[in-house]
Image 1 (cartoon, rainbow, N blue to C red):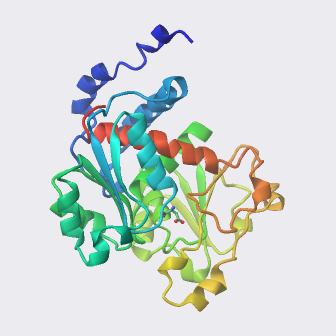
Image 2 (image 1 turned 180 degrees about the vertical axis):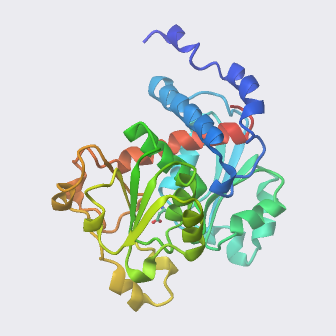
Image 3 (image 1 turned 135 degrees about the vertical axis):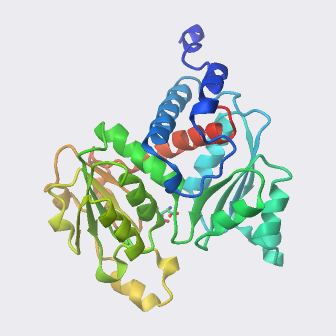
Length: 331
Ligand code: ASP
């Protein structure tokens, strides 16, 4: 490939100048999807596409050279932590990875979240935080002077996941308006469902919520759905939604949120997406999952071209590259 053909596409210095005023994200925390309007979403998605193009062509750039990101994870993670690290490294920055469990940090000695965050900001330009408590990212942001990016606060929100989910829908189906989106599984504790639902309310969509009775969408989020006057239905059966769904968003039952494990056992194998079920679905639809899956999608569905969950994983890196560049004032 002739490298000179790349220059116009990736003139990030020029982009930085143009964008600093328009994205509104420079220096900001990313705590909830509530901060993103449609204009901002289009902006992030456009930057995400550029990141994809750049990675495909040259692998990485020096845009964030000299910048350091602290990844502080109080809960397990594979994709969110790795994609933030890969995103930072592909943009030329570096990472403090406290991702193999805070048990190896001073948290295990009893250090508070506030002190840990105030320590990390001495070294890093931004902090990615995953924590089991709802509101922990907001709390960290109250103490930190550098941007805090919420990588999941208990059963609360997971805004960067919702951005990559929405981006995946947009890239797979070419639009968001007019789609029928069915969410399946643990709608009560699934933070990715909470964030994606709120984000989808910015669009003209039909929503279908499929869950066992005890795992229905929390009332506070359902009230937002009702206030937005979108077409919405709840059911216990995937069979009720599969034929009309453009997006089947499947989730894991969040074992770690149950205080009564017998209750978990009673619902854990409630839904399994199989090739037989997929035969009833539209030809042009997508199956998504924030992963990890623990049985909700049969492995034999993976070869179906409509299975988008690993493409969704990859999109996570591009969207997090776009977010880091924006928050650090480089895009
Ligand atoms: N990885 C996602 C999350 O952290 C989904 C899950 O764990 O089921 O919320």
